[in-house]
Amino acid sequence: RYLQENGFSHTAFVFGHESDVTRTAVDPNNVPPGSLITFIQKGLQYLELEANLDAGDGISEGDFKMLAPEELLVHDIDQLQQLVRERKDEDRDKRRDKKDGRERDKSKVDGAAAAAAPATAAPSAPPTAMDTDDLEVPPASVLTLNGHDSEVYVVAWSPNEPLLASGSGDSTARIWNLGPGSNYSKSTVLSHDVKASKDVTTLDWNPDGALVATGSYDGLARIWSKDGKLKQTLNRHTGPIFALKWNKKGDALLSGSVDKTAIVWDAKSGEPRQIFEFHTAPTLDVDWRNNTSFASCSSDKLIHVCKLGESSPIKTFQGHADEVNAIKWDPSGRLLASCSDDKTVKIWSLASDKPVQDFRDHEREIYTIRWSPTGSGSANPGMPLLLASASFDKTVRLGGAE
Image (cartoon, rainbow, N blue to C red):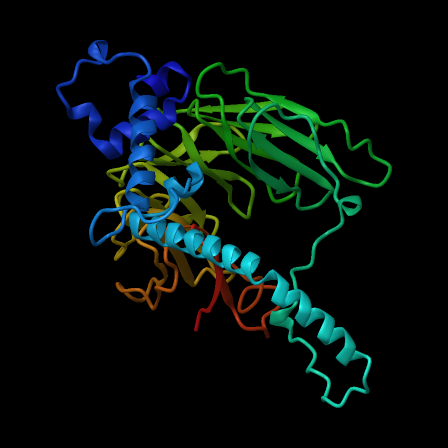
């Protein structure tokens, strides 16, 4: 109820779906206002207390160590206890360093005297690339585009012009002209004119860059001209749209929604060509294989490969142990990559029911994957095909497809 009253209808839906809270016999009218916040605060305080207790005798040794809310939310209890131990060790080291300060000062004086004598030691080896710091881009080289009033969820470049589209939680998408001599402080605003469920979370340019499609939490897909005019409103989904993709020909648009369906739309008429109702849980991502076939993935842990005109999937991949967050065909359309909350990345082929590659190196959930623009079907066919994956474990990993 708290989430719904504050306009977070999608979050409320996901929370109710995954926690089964909607199946309980609790009357929402009997729940006091602010109960959710109270439970979260008490939970964080309990975790902080538990992290400071010794695992053996339940006694906290040394000073109580405060933990940041972010740390309490993203780490399990073993990791939190390790953080507390490390911080207590750091405090002991600081006290020891302070006690030995005079000895270190004397050592520095002696070292300075020794430095005046001729050096006899061999110079140290230069640092390797792994020893150097990350390259930081100076602020003067960064262009900031201001205009959105809420979180920006997605950006996409036009394929043919220096135009950048962005989608935000402020119920707008914006098109920024970044060509030479342009006024970067101004943008073309695509107003979605919605009150609740206002987030614009997915967008995609058509192949010639004349049109951009947007999808939002109100369940509507919209097609706009590059100068900001609304051309079509696609109204058939009954839940938020999570994914939206044009086919390479540019005559069809593919969308995936929380309503468990994927829809192929006629881009000219704005009418559905076919509605695919194969998933049993929210459709999280979709991706075209060619102009008539595509793949979809879902919270139901399945991946379906579908084709226009077919009444059932031409292939179903089953192997993930948790919801599948994203899918992506390689440049040739021969291999399909998927990533999941089960911490794995898998590569599938239509010629096999089992994954041809199964990467298990990540330690937390994986939410995005991208193929390199190399290998068969790309502009760089002589270079090896690689797959990049990014995870909540703070790492990006690269794997070979073959």
